[in-house]
Length: 317
Length: 120
Image (cartoon, rainbow over all chains, first blue to last red):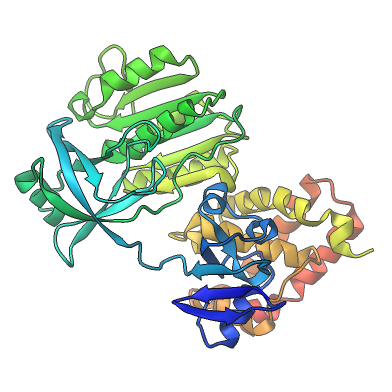
């Protein structure tokens, strides 16, 4: 009989669902419809294989991380499970490089002390000390580079970012969390068009996602729109132009929202420019990162433009 | 044959959810109730609602409906808003070319939740 392992305890599951098994033992798992639809009871398999039907209706990025719906999961083998917001774990990492990407954004490379699993575009928590941490998205691609790469924007009076700008140097040992988030590329549907819209350091996850998609041989259009107030705000410009030269399906459009837009730059708010160029997003996959107001507005506008809610991935930072 | 099978099962729910949710978010009568909600999570809830209206699997009780909408009732949710949702449900099914007699059955199921949703 399969057992369900949760919080270090083993429970006999029998024919029951994982949700019923845990609930019967007094474990609190939030649930609502109990029919595999509302996704309230979502859990993650830490080890063991979950039957495919227990992932029905989940976003591809959640299924890829072994999330499943506990109310319709009848395991066939022992599985270890955790709630989705369970601690992401902590890791030590060494800073291997600190460089100015522009006057407001630092590029930091980190080498974790132990094997570190992640997908390009997910985020980590970066700890200043025991209690203060901030989320930063991963711009690196595990298959392409050994070090993690994050982009830190200087936030006025920002506790963690100011500490990073003032103190961090190559050689330092820092604490980070494991990677989380569902803003990443899932291989498959290689012909699907992809729209990516980001502002400021919201470019970081998009830079990872784009290179991951290209590495996987993605064939559909990959269209990146990066927004900034002025041209000083852009970074990784040379790298992105190079990628566009090497891959005919990738296009890069830097958009300036205030002041003059020199040749090669679009003039306007990044979301408006992107939607003006792509008014019908039916069947598209969409990634949105950066300013929370832009991301919120973009979620709705890209949905109204035809993208399915299942295909819209967003990180509001 | 059950309504759920006739209407097309899970594939029908998947086809309907984006269309329905777009209509709801564009509807001036009710869109303000969705300000600030997580669109991705809300979409899963819309899917559960449609599955129920289509006669499909669900375990929602009247009590769940009351609890789940109590905060909206406190913000003024009333019959006119429920009517708006019913309109959007009908329009979605019409757009998907669902036959009229099946739309009527789905509408009747949705209608049966009115009192609980509105906390009456």
